[in-house]
Length: 237
Ligand code: GLP
Image 1 (cartoon, rainbow, N blue to C red):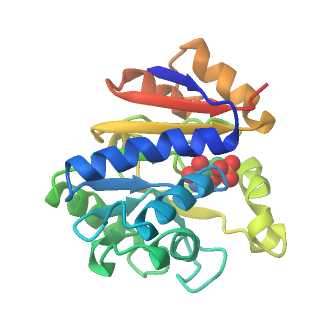
Image 2 (image 1 turned 30 degrees about the vertical axis):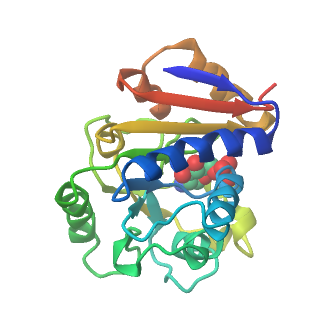
């Protein structure tokens, strides 16, 4: 695991953006794994800026998002579909048919999960998987206790995760109790992983990851078993 300390949130975003840009310039057909949350917003701004400046094109690239709430539609402003459109996809030239976000509002959610892994396999896997981290160490929506072997699956959200994500909803009662998420195995299958950690609320998570202990109680610790992980962190203490 490679650790890069950034001097600020902007610096963290720029370091991450450089890695994405270099990948895309090298391989136009790159497949990116995207994440939601406040942490990657700065990275997405950098990528939009680079596209608008004519520095790069996503026309042949593909992306797969990590997760989505169950029971809300893509039009819902709190959905991850909506977040990704607002922060990235509406502002770059990635083709709609190449943008994958797990479906959270379908009758057959189990099938949606299996289909998601199949779709990732069909395009040859993810080149760079972007991750944030939850205060309890979750990655995607893989909460503590999740077996590392799981692929895309349906999860119950913990109370702490629902509370942390309440800011995107009118009240805690509106925060869904379930989500569909790439499993830890799906994440581990990516060729390269970039994990962003920012802010003092993530201090415990940062320290626990840095300790090197590998346990299902702390989902992000699975990444110690991956051969190409870069953690870019800032303001964690
Ligand atoms: C959510 C997402 C995660 C994300 C986490 C942290 O639970 N499912 O993918 O990493 O929040 O979000 P933030 O970056 O806003 O702290």
